[in-house]
Image (cartoon, rainbow, N blue to C red; front, side):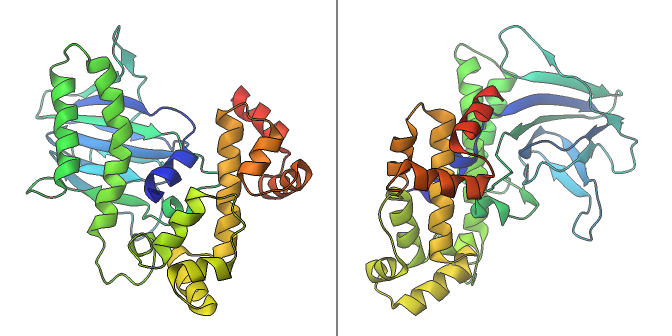
Length: 311
């Protein structure tokens, strides 16, 4: 199983929103927090990202052509030609007929910068630990041959946006959707091979990765710590310690989390009866499932489904 794809798929609640931002110095744009994860791709030019809030790690970040920034929690921030430039409040984007993107133009008559900005709609109420344990801000330069697949995606996006042709209206949203996977894969592959903990290590670990794949492939199976440990050739105690250290929670806690995450996704995206959802997530009865789901989400499965459909 592709754990990264599964984890992100379980959190997505809608299509990405994207805006093409054109700035000519001096320019500054204040962007409020968003529900989900934010991203920026510098198509050409240079600029600064200034995070809003307190913390020694929240420093102005210089960006240039090809750079990609991922903001895990969609925190508020400023984009500007220089950190000292006053920032305007976010402007409403304009949409051209047939275009999949909005556009914002701002600034004076100085050097130009063009960015693709937007956010992925991710359920932050119960984020998957793979996402919640990421750094708040990920900066991925793609120049100088770094991250060739991510660089190729950025170049394709730039080409489609600069010279729209037949099919661009379908190609651009698909590239933006795929960009999230490219970003997180690049970050994971950037982590040192000696990393002792965290999801980057978990996804490469010879024991933990197969156990995660087994749970994701069949959440309804009656897994135990013993059966998972036996599957990967470790003792129960050694497996539990290793899994907890890398994933951040014990194996059975993660199994329950993934069952509930799978159930919530089925409730949001399908019309499957509650008995079917219960069976597909390892519960022998609708009553047992409903009780477990309410304990995790604070409301009954039927109410959750209605709220999700109405949103």
